[in-house]
Length: 245
Image (cartoon, rainbow, N blue to C red; front, side, top):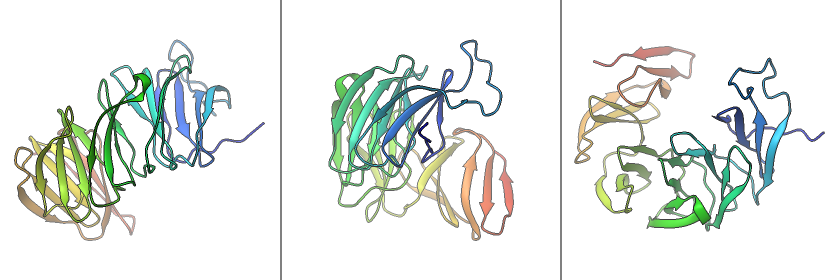
């Protein structure tokens, strides 16, 4: 039996755990019964429902497209873009881009968005992997991106946080003073974070409203994207919790 080690945490779609590996395999393992009851540990029981082989390692988590997550999108380090029906395992579409993705792609009900190491942002429709639009930059894109209410937030090195219209790829604004990734929304304002430094940003114009010194903290983890508590994790093991005001 071939051992499969996930390169990133799996995403859960219905009764399946989906993940990619460093060898380029994309797998769906049984995670729960058809009724939704969790299997006893180890939950996936090593039972593979379906799998595909892509070219290049898969370093980014798959993205689930649609509210029910019935289609998953995967990007490999060699630039393979692959869409699969999560329930049946049938391939939906396949495309090729010049570079892979280190940051996880994000998706809405109909489109998956990729920030690529080939200096571009892509929007793909799963069916036949149709390219909706492409936004070119002058830098490799390797930081987490975020999608909220039809706007895609992309940290572009040397340019700043860039807000793109998710439907068209048009630039809404560029905030040159922000280099971190958007990790949450509080009271309608964006929260961006880069190790030790958080910023509150006006979502409509990109203006920096507040700079927050979080020296010693390496990660901010929101419990939900909008108006939820945020945990700060420090290198020393310190943990802080920030509540919405």
